[in-house]
Length: 274
Image (cartoon, rainbow, N blue to C red):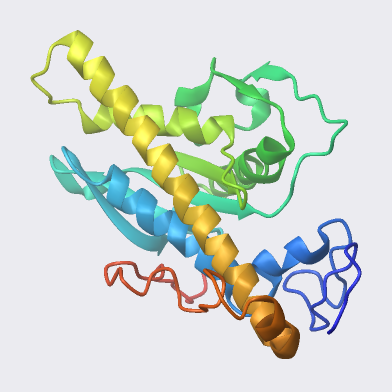
């Protein structure tokens, strides 16, 4: 039986985005995203379900990469449009699923979003409170900084068109949400039920229920897909040991969790240069 150190990823192949180094801090959990197409599979599961959840009412959602800033090669994952004008996007989503976990010493503080947090492409969030956690730093703040830089770059090159609204949507492989992602779902709930004829009390309940169910289903998708990816990596790296440990039970299948969901597809990625 092959035994590997808990503090070191067992995948000896070059890791995506990190050259030949391995994530010592993640240990075996690094297999969730470092092996084969695991990273894309987890990401696409989030984008797929988020697209299906937001779609409906007055909103039409398209799961396709888009380049909102023509002069900068930075792409979003989801395009949201309104039935009133399908030629113009209401907003975009840029999903990020990180494999990081919080340190025990982390005590995130609540911060009030403002322009200094690089919310140039989502000014609707100004005045909202989020926890300045590792997940916010790794997903939302990083993406906001990128798109704020792209907007400034376009402006300096003579583009005076209105900046598109872009919402970073951050999660981790344990099913945790960035506070900014939950606030984004609340924004979408307001748009999704905009033309509802329900009373105010019933409408507030419908919005809250939709946000709750969307978060619950996204958590289930991410956790299920991460478990499948880790299980498949162990099966490929240690086939003999895997058969001894998981010869029976629920872990003996390496079938994709999406095998019974034909409507789940990968994001249509545009490889053309911006």
